[in-house]
Image 1 (cartoon, one colour):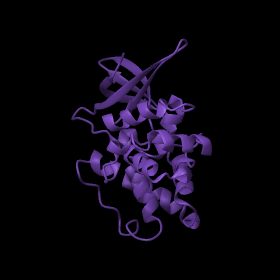
Image 2 (cartoon, helix red, strand yellow):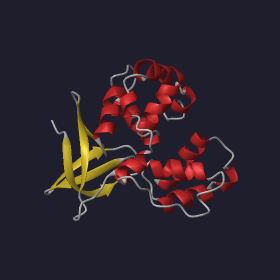
Image 3 (cartoon, helix red, strand yellow):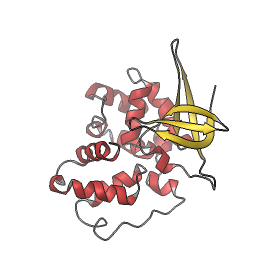
Length: 209
């Protein structure tokens, strides 16, 4: 079983499939959106992914995460009835581990159902079964703050204020660069009064196209 990979990302698909080159061997790994932005590359451009090896009769699939916190969240999610690995990846693409923990603690079913593939019944089941189990993953600070060692690149004056600031912050927290987040917020400026979860989903479609 593979539990960790350290190598260069040699290809990346919009659906979250990356190929990690580890001393000449390429491993296909499925990761949540924003994961690579939360990984710290070494001087040679190599990153470390914490891995879950998922084995079925017809396939062996690797799922990768920026840290143990996200891997733990993935394992807990997939232990809930009706939540397979793909849905768990979808959840963590929209709600990194810390934000997921906070949403569950609040019983925020609406936020959970904003995730593609998660209906009201599954969202309610997640709250019921994971509300207490994921408490330890909530850090009280954003995932972006953790991944950058305590600092986030400052936003431009335009992005730091106004209704688009929440969207920019959400995208940066998911691992996108500030410039990318600001560009997406600017494109969606005419729709900025819409719910944040709607804007995040639309931004993700634009950023990975």
